[in-house]
Length: 200
Image (cartoon, rainbow, N blue to C red; front, top):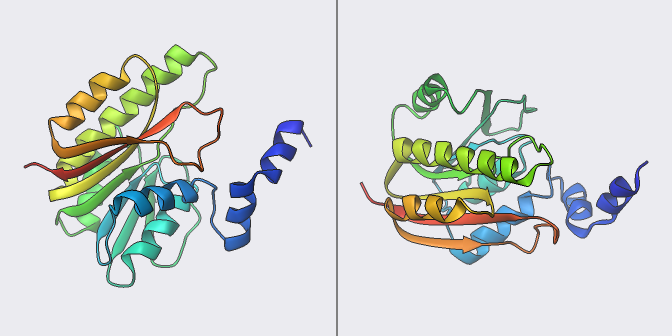
């Protein structure tokens, strides 16, 4: 067992996720975003981009309740969870978005979430650029899927291209906030863009 793994296991949010049955510690990031910004409501339809292993989808399903629905998409396989629709798909391909549309009956959705991360290369400039690319893909999907006044949450790595992405997002939504949940590791360069009320 490596030192990194031992430290991870000791970490509060990791232990808490195990205790309550969330598939990932990142579930607490969405819970903290929700507590502050109230982006998901009971009865909403939520699309979770880059959903594996399913922690955000679990929290989203708790929030939308029996009347709401959650669709999770990832290029990786995800073990089933009752009440959540998961499928494998490449979010850079239009066919994946068409499949989401078919699942929701070609209706628009209330919330698009993206906790997508690139494969980490170890070169921060490369990783940041890849992160922003995924953010831009997520923004395109949000524009396609969201109802008027729908909400969008997107993870990004901080760096030189982040402000440009925030400006692009700001042109599409009424309000934009940048937020770092306390459940994020202290060493992490992650930040979350909270975009509310898409303007159609």
